Image 1: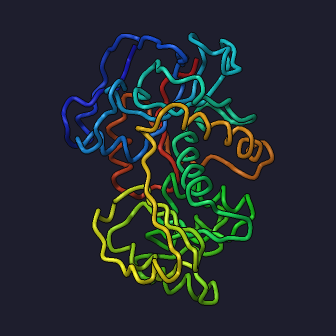
Image 2 (image 1 turned 180 degrees about the vertical axis):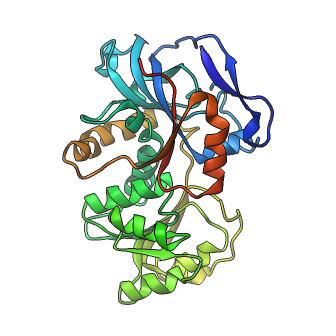
Length: 328
């Protein structure tokens, strides 16, 4: 099969087309003929040598795919050979065939193409796990999304808005802020020209927001604490702004604040399977109802993975970048 491998840590051009054997199956897995694969920030970190591959996972990049089930233990998960699915995987997505735990597969939502479906698993698993499971965003509560124009961001905005929450989002330009608002954010906040903490406090009458989904960290953390409501929660999923922060623990104590962090890739199959069941029951119907939609900025042929990574690193995109692997 054709695949994209990381020849050595480095710039996008270290991603090279290669020939690899079709991966072998383990118990509980399915083999997917990949039609499309989503690109995510962890792929870039892996290419740079900053995101170790979990033991037993493919060294090929790619954490989400969509395509046709062609072999494996599909019946136990309620699938049949030939079904179109999308799946969260530990690696190996940038290839014509990829294995996935059957329990981490979801049907392609009705009306969506495989290209669109490939943009869903990584961000929807991440947002559901962190915003709704870990941070327990409850009815009537509000959410601030840092990096609202990213793949994670557009998912969080849409999902929280579809479920009736007030949503605010930060982005790096007025155009990106307007895009966030079109997706359901009450207000896009330009972090280059506005103080997001001050804006949030003004919009909430001084109360603050209940939950913040943060992929920045660093010096954002003390400002986030300032704009959290009492009993507020920060769900930390990445450290793009740095791994260290100076915070006022007095506020954490007095106002019963919580800061939690998590990474999804190394978690066991059972953990991810539980998220998949929640998504299938509570989120996938929202696609069929027209309340959610994939947001794809651009797609590239598999052989142009390097160009796709360069686009992601430019941060000029809004939404997801996807690789087209095969059409049949």
